[in-house]
Image (tube, rainbow, N blue to C red; front, side, top):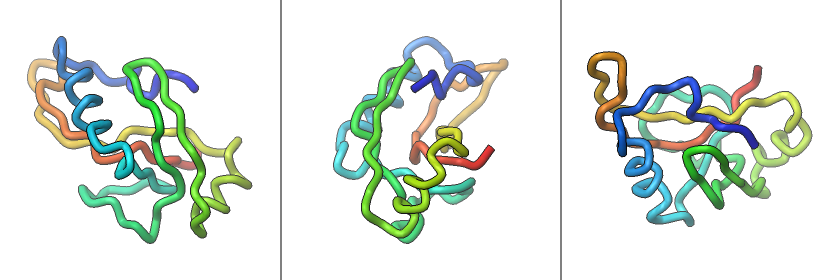
Length: 106
């Protein structure tokens, strides 16, 4: 996989802290299929679970959910994108909470 954070500018140390907080409970690191805007992961939309996440790479497993089955068939048509909220100052993200890594159609 490629760097899903490369289009975002983080203040030094913020990305690593954000990732560490997200992966603190990997059993809850779910992702959804399609563009999502909520700060809550809708379990009806879940398609995959992130099993490894670093600043430059990630791994995931596709789940046996209705959206997981769709993702399995459409894996070459999606791009993985982080869904996060946070504070932005002088061109950089200074504080962030990663909600999920979603599989979005290109």
